Length: 442
Image (cartoon, rainbow, N blue to C red; front, side):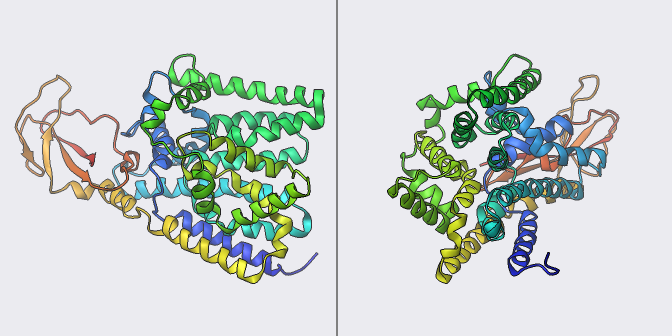
């Protein structure tokens, strides 16, 4: 055993530190990283005001609650156990940092799984490639359901390589409920398990999948107050072209020519080259190759397409191409570094990076000192139509300070990071009922 780390190990350590620093950046990639995870968890566990999107409020909800809590439950509970004042900048920043650090920790599952799956002589180079990808260093530390789906697929590849079929069955269910696109990448793993183990594998897959499925459906049914299978509702919704039109209709080839190059750049080219080479030799590749082909191919049949939908491909692509990394010339590595540095700087540094500091500022109670106050309904249902000013106390009139904020041409402001109580305090006797920020997104 070497006493000193190798250059690749040192480089990997530096890349992990970079990922950690990027996780603390206030960059904001897409509203779904808050409104499908943290917004709901904070509303449920901290009873903060929140903007619940239609996926949770429709009569046929399409988002499962257990994967959501895997993403945002621990950091939200941490704030609940160690509560700073609710209307403070410090509390808002604490929740934000806790969420990002939790996502950083979850992203390490991808590294560990790839390290365990690839051959010993290439494993350190493989995890260096993985850690230097902006898809992992930036996208995976944001609280997307796609991030969790990607991590589960990476673990599933590891479990598949060890032929642990019961655990694989549970992971297949969990990943599908995390994000339905997971099933498109994981399909070859299920088929491959059945082909390798036949009847015994089928029984063990079912043994793992059945209790996981029961747990998911039970949790969702209890949460929504009725019998519901969110995956089924999701499939029904996304099979309706009229529904998808509201989110944007894209050509079938968008993932192939835009999403994959944007997320993976040179790695996508190496993957394609190796895949073509193997198929020309009538060698049909391993399970990792088929996971990428299946996932991207099936997602291309869905009219609505976004780059983050193909995030789960990253672990499978690195596993499949790891043996070719030694052949990459120096110019190829320079291209890889430049590609990821540029996109990490954009999506991990400056992209909508002013939104979260603005929310933290609004969460600070001192911002409410000079704004107008409007009366609130008291315990007896009384209301006075007069408007008072902060600092002036009118006997018999309750009031709260209200800051009206217009968010113009920005992503939606995450309401839960304001850490406002879900319901305004209702007081009588001219007492100050606290401050409230009302946001309108334009």
